[in-house]
Amino acid sequence: MKLLLKRLAEGTRAIGRRPLLARAIDALRRVLAYPGRLGAAIVARLPGGIAGRIRAIESRHPHLVGQAVVVGAGIGIVILAMARFSDDPMPVSPPADRALPDFRVIENTGERKAAFIEFLSPVVESENRRVLAQRDKLLALLDELEEGEQATPDEHAWLVKQAKRYRVKAKGDLQRARELATRIDIVPISLALSQAALESAWGTSRFAREGNNLFGQWCFTPGCGLVPLRRPEQATYEVQAFDTIAGSVRTYLRTLNSHPAFQPLRDIRAQARRAGRKPGGLAMAAGLIKYAAIGEKYVHHIRSVIRRNDLDRLDGAG
Image (tube, rainbow, N blue to C red):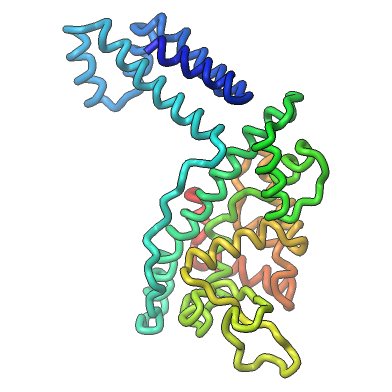
């Protein structure tokens, strides 16, 4: 195991600058010199039943068990570190791409809302996890850049790609990373659910049923979506159609995270992050004034949906 960790550290330094990963591996090599002490500390934090079984084995093979616990924990840390600093984040398994249920058949309003929330919550949570995987990679790279390190060619290319995706115009890798840190972030589940409820009439609108569009997104290429029945004669927009509900949620998240109209929303979220608080839907709703023509009334409607349906309880999972 010591040889394996040594080779991992050497390989890390050889294939690219990943100082935090290298330090993690080097630290693991050092702690392996004290398997008994560290192993006992790890076991002490395990659930009682598991800890008891480990201690029973330890009474017969004390050195072996202590080292095994440390090695097991070490391998986990190394895998997580390698995943964090890989070129691509660890894949996120999305919920099954189920078809949108016909919520119109549920006559009871409370039951219909509950079914909509139960259906959509895991989709939003999954897409948020996808964003967080990108955010973890970004923040790790930002730490290196803040310490004066230079981005590798692959890291530079990744930053440029994300800057284009999120409409960041900053020059230089450090400035790009700083700006992206305010954009590559979650949207609280309560906010996403409340907007989806308002924009799609709790999943019963024509655009939701025929185009998987829960957020009223527009598109401007002929045939890209559904033509509203009351569209003005000279207008050319359509209501965008998506193959899946997840596609609608993903586009919604990227819109809030990139469009200039929602800079106030991102500022509120960034302020919460700096204060060590998790972003909340009620607070971030203030940044949605430009999402609809009714402005402040729209913000009021969003907050009302969150409060009346106790949606802010879901933000802890987002």
